[in-house]
Length: 256
Image (tube, rainbow, N blue to C red):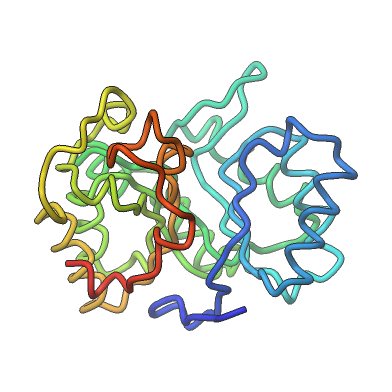
């Protein structure tokens, strides 16, 4: 396994991470064994945006067995309301959801406290000027989160985060198909009909990657395979399936 320094956090993270989405669909013992197998192969970073108790319990049980060797991305603003995922900045829900995450992770800190899923400039402004960000800063000051991160699908918002001075890393949607698409504050637009228009990387995305490199802002990757579309001949925007190893064989700085 190769390890890379995650920007200015200084954390050494495995080149491949464990994305925990859909854990709730599996038998807990089976899911726990998959995580342990990943760890045995050198994977040391896990993302948990999911607010449901089952997913959090599965992750919590495994990381508690060897907590010092796991780097955890935990999301702030991902909540479970009436059995459903709800993204919110309402502190009535945000704080209990984060405290539930800590409890189910069986610890008193999370390595990367992620400002969850900010895709519009208006929402960015709302988040950093209200009670939500005050809470994030309190968690950082107390050591409950070791580093402040953010997740976004929008390179325009990503640039704002990279320039702000307090975001230390960003979880971003990176893959060859997304890289050709212009910025949008509605990720659903990227999952409709897609004909692969455009040539080369979108300038706003290229600028975002350049800025992160310049500012030493680490990037962790989500949606790396375009929801599986890159491997499906009928759905791939390239009119053919891509072999898995072709997706991330070129460093970001060489893909501008």
